[in-house]
Image (tube, rainbow, N blue to C red; front, top):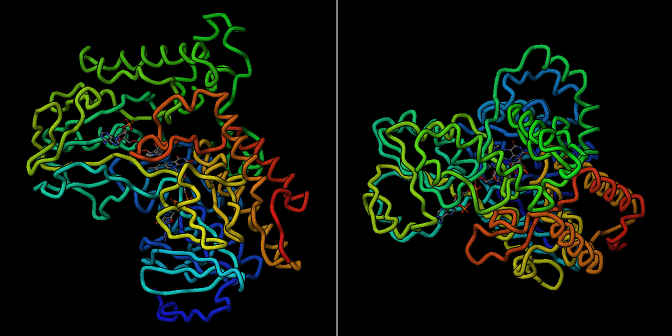
Length: 544
Ligand code: FAD
Ligand code: N01
C-alpha cells in the first residue's frame, strides 16, 4: 500500500471519492476500469494482498475453471485478449491469476486499489447523501457511490465442529489456501466435503498422501471435464471472434456459447435419440450435458433419465461396488446442485490408500487432537482439508455492517432471505450497487459474462446520474417485492428448490432456505436490464 493511501480524512458531508468499490476480483477490477473511463475518482478496497478474488484465495491443488477458458475471460477489450494465450480447455488457478495480474498491469489498476484492507462497515448519511466506508485499518472515507464487488463465493466457511481448536495436525480450507502450497507427502489426510472443490482436489492430494479419507455428506453428480491442451487453431479462431462471441453469450441462458440447448422435450424423443444426446454430451465434457433436452431441469420424470445415465457412467469407473454405492448420488436430481466436472475423481477411489466415509449415515461428531470422529470411530489424520464451501451469495455482504436510510441494517432486512431489485440494489440503500447480487443470474451463469453485464449497466447508470441532476438512485419497495416474487415463481417452475444446495442457503445451519439466483437466464435478464434503463430506471426512485 502506498503511503498517500493511508489515513484519509473523512470530513462530514464531503466526498473523498466519487465511488468506492469493495473487492478486486474480476468484478471489482472491471468496475474500476469503467468508472475511471467516466473520469470519476475511485478507491477499491481489497482484503487480499493482490487482485484476483476467487483465484487469489482458492489455490488448492487441482483448482481450475469449469467454464471453458476461451469463454472464462473478459470480453470487453479486444486488445487485452489478443495478447493473452490460454493453454488448456479449462485453465488452472495459477494461469487465471496470472491473467488477472496481466489485466491489472495493462490497465494500471493497482494504483487505485488499497490491498490488505477489509471493509467493515458502510453507513449511509442521508443528509449528505454519502456513504461512509470504514475499514479494519480504522479508516473512514466518504463516497457518493458504493459498489459491492465482494463475490458470491468469497466467504469461506469451516463448519463449527467441536474440538477443532484441539486438533494437533494442520488444517486448511480450500477457499483460503496457503500461498506457499502444502506438501502432503507421507501424510494421512482427511478431506471433508465433496462439492466441486473436494472433487477437484482429492485426486491431486491423493497422489501425494500416504492415506486419504474423504468424508462425504452428499454424493455429487460429476462428469469427466475432458480437459486437454487447446490447439493453436482454436486460440487463433477465438481471438477473431471473442467480441462477437461475448455479445452472443449475453443472449444465451447461461452466458456460455459452447452450451447448446436442445429445445426438444424428452417425451418427443425416442429413447434412442435421448440416450444418443446424453451420451454425446457426457463424452464431450462440460455443462452441456444439462441441455440434452428442454425439460431436463423442469420435471422429475425428465430429469430421472439424465440422472440414471450419469449414475451408470459414474459406476463404470469405480471398481469396488460398495464404494460405488457410497459415491452414487441418489438424493437429488442431476443439476440442482452444481454439476461437478472432474479429472480422475472417481478413479481415485480405486487406489488402496483412498477411502470414503459416508457422513450422511454417520455425521461427523467431533474433531479430536488426532483425527475425525464419525459413527463412533476415530479416523486418525495428520491434516484436514475443509472443502466445505462458502456462505454463498450473501455471506460477504452481510459480514459488512451495511446501514442504509434510517439506519436500517442490510443484514436485518435480509434476515428471512436476500431482497433485491434485479440483484443490483435494495430498497432503503441509495447509491449502493451489488455486482452479481442475489436475484441476478450470477452463479447460474458464466460469471464473467454476468459481471460484465452488471458492470456495464452500473457504469452507464452512474454516468447518467453524474452528468444529470440526480443525487441518488434507489430501488423502490414495490419493484423489489415484485422482483423477489418473480424470482421465486421462476425457481418454483424448476427442480432447483428441491435440493439442499448452497443456491438455497441450505449448507449453512440457520440460513433461510430461499433460492437466491435468478433462474430466468442471462439473455432474458439482459433484456429486462435494458428495458429498465431505457424507461429512466423504472422501478428505481431517482432523487434530485
Ligand atoms: P471474487 O472473485 O470472489 O472477488 C471478491 C473479492 O472481494 C475477494 O477478493 C474478497 O477478498 C473481496 N472482499 C470481499 N469482502 C470484502 C470486504 N469486506 N472488504 C474488502 N474486500 C472484500 N465461475 C464461473 O463462471 N466459471 C468458473 O469456472 C468458476 N470457477 C470457480 C472456481 C472456484 C474454485 C470458485 C470458488 C468459484 C468459481 N467460479 C466460477 C465463481 C467465481 O467466484 C466467479 O467466476 C468470479 O471469479 C467472481 O468474481 P468476483 O469479482 O465477483 O468475486
Ligand atoms: O463447496 P460446496 P465447494 N459436514 O458447498 C460438505 C464453485 N467452484 O467449495 O452437499 C460434512 O459445493 C457439503 O455437503 P452437502 C462452484 O460454483 C467451482 O466445493 O452440503 N460435510 C459439500 O459436499 C461450486 O458449486 C469449481 O451435504 C459438509 C461440501 O462440503 C462452489 O464454488 C471448483 C459439512 C461443500 O461443497 C462451491 O464449491 C470449486 C459438514 N458440516 C468451486 N458442511 C470449479 O470446478 C459442508 N459439507 C470451477
